[in-house]
Amino acid sequence: EAARACLEYAFGELALETVCCSIRPENVASIRVAERLGMTPCGSHTVIYNEKEMPHLIYELKTGN
Image (cartoon, rainbow, N blue to C red):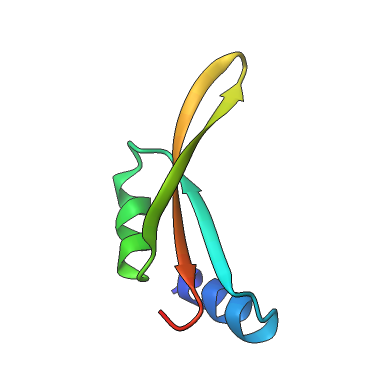
């Protein structure tokens, strides 16, 4: 519910065309939420935290999807 409300705010109030999220690949629950909201994978990036590389997946949803 909270994620859907954030998307409604981003698209409705802020008039954004695209919303992206960054998710760790092992965070299966967050990936399921993103996919349930209609988000699709569009890339990846790596975050360095405490000198450790942490891969992330990028999911996006565009206006009208």
